[in-house]
Length: 413
Image 1 (cartoon, rainbow, N blue to C red):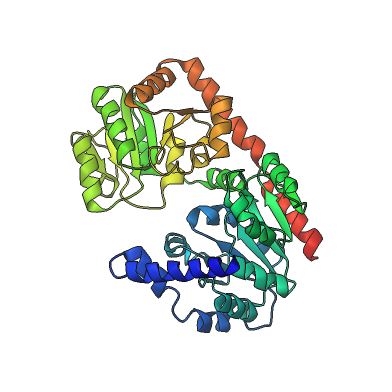
Image 2 (tube, rainbow, N blue to C red):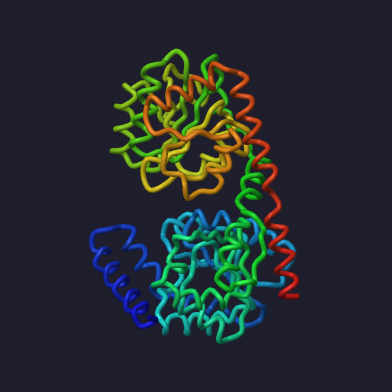
């Protein structure tokens, strides 16, 4: 089966090379891996031990970030290597200052894995959440290097636990320790003969709490939100989300104001949003420094602001639920506000938990959105109960980073 796995990697590489001829992201994936072994050789001088953290993309980085920064603070004698699989992670965080070197992870071929691990020679390796590259796992194991999975989650429908995936389960048993988010994940691993587990929770709670605690004010946004109207902040939206929100704002222009941060901010998409909201919009890039405008809708046409915007909301909406899945809802919930999102949320434990506690609401139509938003805006008791539920939920889930650090120190020191 390992031969089939390696064949699959080769086919994937061929597909990416073909796609790179017309796809920008695929081109970055290929070009970013050129000269990677020469670059990593310059980093690995052998003078200090290397702590290697690997993330698939930006979301996984946010989960790994609290541990990276805690480790850097406590153990400055280590050099920290951060690798990414996806351009969407590398391009955004390539200048992150809490590591010594950031690069792409070479494709998981036997030769690449052997060469990369030999050059880096890490003291230990941390893969974040979903990253299980079998050739890298084998090479790390052969060299007796401690290897950890951070913020891991497991479900019965995953490949490892199907009859046809049993061969890959053997690779999981090579992991030194799993830091899992839930007791359910721990029990599932134990059922399949894996016992090296610590239930730590999700490090993202620590991250969003830090963001909220350190958030600076945005005077222009504050001016825009100074209104008798109820403020909705919608983050990481896609076209289906924007269509529903535009119906709401167009039906109740005297009741609501909206700050919307779309997931994609290319010009054609921004123009579509402006049209959907009947041109009652202003872009952040053109908003006067006073923040004053007659427009009801502020479109955020820049990146990096979203986590700071939710603090200005009375109600938040998180996009993606009518597509592949919702985006980060914890960045909103940490501010103690109700959270609304679409139907595709069932793979996200925090969404299920928040719905159960009353801090979040799932909708699947415009009527559902309107009913939910009007109930929260017209019923102060309903709003307060939901806001408190969000606040208590996030506060009660913090502390995963400290648990991870404690276990790492037991194994490594």
